Length: 98
Length: 463
Image (cartoon, rainbow over all chains, first blue to last red; front, side, top):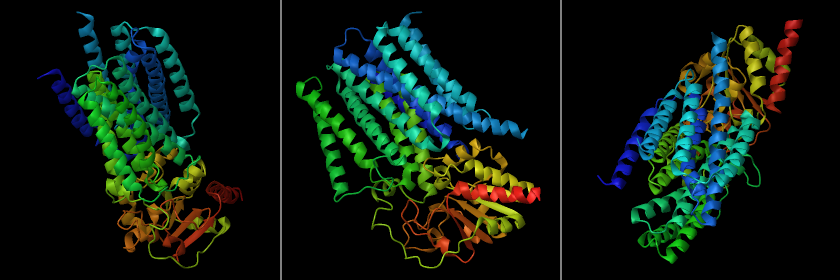
């Protein structure tokens, strides 16, 4: 299989894995699931880092990359922290029960 | 072992952490650790990238510090009631980042294969729609500049269709010869059009349909990241993006099912647009009741079902609702909170608010749990919910929400509706429930009304 075919192969498997993982989440956790998975979509930061840090790139690419790093960081940091804040409330309630 | 192989293993580790993290999110017990695990995975991916590529750090640091600071502060100060807007904004920035990654990568090296060019086109298109669509969703949810109601104009679907065709044609031109100068212009045009498309596709969506749109945009941001993974040929983006894309699609499907509508119906029907959504006209007289009289009924009630909706979030009434629930429980009454899957503005919105207010987990129920027992319930208390308790969905085939599964509060002996006025819900559909003989309206701010009821219980306990 060529390199591109392999990437596609990984993609298809990951989609099915995602469907399997998520379909069992109870409705109570839908909001944290959404904001938590939203944070994961910030993985695009990997591409942003390369674009912002490649020294031989042109000034425009550096600017685009830097803005991309900032945007992805908002997504990642904000997403994880806000999910943690929500889940802390869920857990607090759970422990109170015991 | 060389650097190349090390980074591959690093990315595999990050993928495993994302997958286990998502798996742990499916139980309240492990969810918080799961989220932490997934964050560690992200840190891993970032560190591996920084170590591997021998990058210049000054610009990276600037962008990273700025973004991290904004994200941290925003996530810390946002009230739980505004969570849908916040998630929409974060999501939009993810889309923007993918768009810029696609553009910058192409800018650095234009001599790419058609496969890569296709991936670049998809990245900027989906990323752009995610970004502008999420911002419009944010503005609609916070009722800033744009009304929460559907905004429609004539021939809207034709305009959208035409834009999509132009975007496809430009994409084809770009992919045909990506290294040429006209191809660059075509890609820039695609970026501009994707932003317009995002605005136009979200602006006709009404507030009641927001849970569907937020889920869909969430899925888009994942797909944009996966497409960016094809551009830079990185498996970790593809795996993580595909996971998010799949999770968003599933949530979208669950939300559609809870409203008994298809996705295309949500996207194109302009549910609740002025003039479009009129069921049979509802006439009759509503029966207002004072909190003092409502207290007497609640005091005697043996079972109460509380149905929260978006209005509870707007009035910030979740703590007052929980306090009333505690008073009722202490009074020997069985209290349940019935949560409709599409109540509020995002999936699980009500669960978050009730969790914040410390409502006991075992008191939460879903519609299918409470509906069969509804005729034995003394009081059903509707706090700021409307469409999800509208009996027209069951009885009036002409109603635009006909067929949507609802919580049958009208079967309870008495229904209290806490509401500001008799206005229709966000779907723009009249609600005959307000005129039923067993319905009593508690007009006014929901929080103030609930606090008045709690005060009555306290006064009675002191006496």
